[in-house]
Length: 96
Picture 1 (cartoon, rainbow, N blue to C red):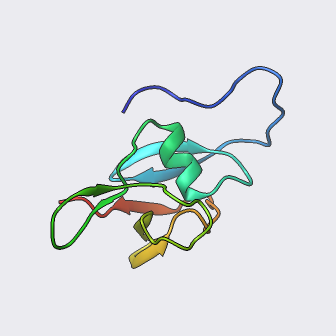
Picture 2 (cartoon, rainbow, N blue to C red):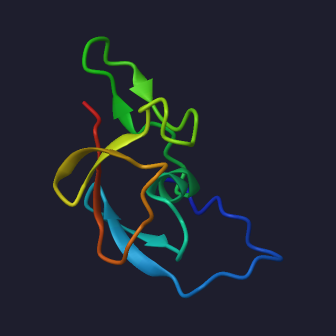
Picture 3 (tube, rainbow, N blue to C red):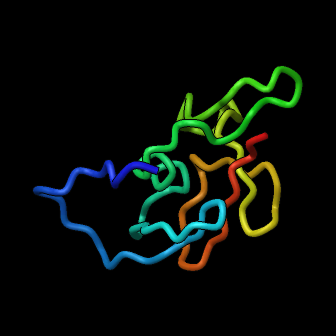
């Protein structure tokens, strides 16, 4: 993935921690959702639809559309926009 897309100047954050996304260590910060972490790392597609295989990512950002589904710590279909990242989380994009 490309580098970190977070704003770096004029922002105070807590201590970063690591989560794993598709087998890769990724830096996250306290208060970030899984969706925020995935977007900051430059990956727009969170999953592919079951029928058409079309890529989906963050759309509504408030849990209504279900386009940001990921597998989190072995649990499928977790809404990334509503779930805060925790140290040690294991995230799998639901990509084909």
